[in-house]
Length: 259
Ligand code: ADP
Image 1: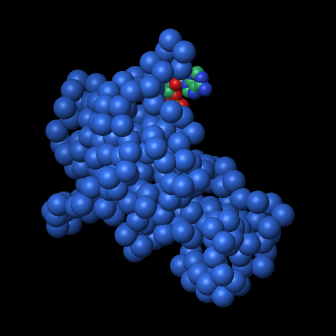
Image 2: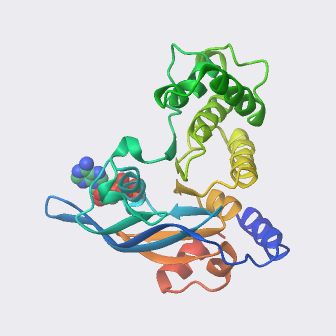
């Protein structure tokens, strides 16, 4: 672990300091209750254009609840979620231009790669020619040329996840939500697909939030990491700052445990 973290750090220190980015998404004092159980407490988070934020924390810390709230599957009991200036409470799920990639890929098994990628474009009633050229472009982008006619079952796990990524990017989403996108893959593929996701996210300039319980993934892929603990953000900072300046004793042992 120390090697992966340190190599992530050394790469980062060589990178230029990021310039101020336009805010795409803001969570303002978001709370979520399940019955009498408060599972998110006053979560504040501002995500800049083109940024990839990792939500990192132990199981049950509230990571999935945050992205489900942003996607619209859960209604927060307090606070606001604002996407490009629009309060999402007033925007129906199917009107949110948010792409999602799940751990389980969630591809349609009876549709080909091309048809899976085309699906959101068909739902939006785009023209045939437009769909075809966009699908070709996306198949190239995720390096699956030659596989477009195949069913998902004919692909490896890594290839299936790339199809899911292409489908999520098809509509040029304002925001991409990645829910443990690598956890179904074996260790070798995890690194490769993680790098691929990061490359495409940066290349397309897509703003993204990724849930992970894996520190190596968060440190290796994210611009900033929000560490969750018991439904609150314990620390939100760049991987380098979290590594060098853990803000609390919890964070110090959290970072220390990785060594
Ligand atoms: P994480 O993604 O970090 O593992 P979750 O956001 O899934 O955490 O869960 C946060 C808390 O909310 C946990 O205590 C979990 O048990 C609880 N929780 C999640 N979903 C439900 C639900 N549908 N009903 C009741 N409690 C839930």
